[in-house]
Length: 420
Ligand SMILES: [Zn+2]
Image (cartoon, rainbow, N blue to C red):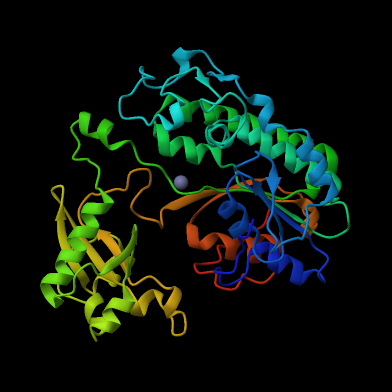
């Protein structure tokens, strides 16, 4: 598969660990999703994710010409296929789950997976195939699949057993996928949380047994948060609804057309990002900056976003009763020389708008749990719990926990973690 970290600027924790340890450190990053593994691992890691066609672990030619023999052997187990046709049911009695109803109308029914327990894991196929692997990745058993591979990686790559600090980065991806489809209040997500806790616990016990408890530094953090399904919030009387991407695109295009007479100016809208048709803008001899910039005002409670608002939204439109502004980001997120890859503008929702599936503020504070290793700094460690923004994590992990250079491109603060 030809994917790589080519568009990723900067370095990762694993990259810096490698540089700091005489190029002897190894990083293995794995996920069910390619982007999950690649961006976690960086340039120098060995990176693995699920091949959507075969349910096996794969990598790309960027990392290796061929899979290592131990990965080939592991793939022969066909672990994902061993769950085919089985059902996913609650681990605990149904009465323990919060919320009386498992059957919520607004939950998704991806690939016929159903909205209620028990879920049959077959993707409506006769034998394992892409539709099955899609639904499999939404189940807690995908985490078993990942963690089994992780153990095999530790054993075969001798991680943590070679006199240097190695990094094993695992993205437990199922809670995200199930959260997007069923919503954070669903019985499915509750069940995944219960099972993930046990899975991580079992994996750590195995790791401590293998390497010694004080030889392992564990950091647990999170992906984005999930907001309740809008229809459920709406039913409770909150102002909530879904905003259709097409309607937003129309609103932005209309604003640009009204102002500059340019038709169909938006090439792509991958919210919150807007990519303008630069070729068309050039042909019409319009100034890109003028297309991006415009008039408009918005209120925002987030300090950083309020600062960004001084850039003035490029266009404002109404959509399903909500106002949305397109924010000009040229000077903020587009350093010179990176223009071709950069986004032209970003959508800013005015009012209490949240994205379906994600909180609208990407800088939510995230809890980060770390268990500090006694081995690293000659101290006995204990579990600690810090709160930091998403941007603070890599610098804090590098400087305060590992004592290596802060990854290039890392924003945010280094949070002092204190001494035991
Ligand atoms: Zn997600």
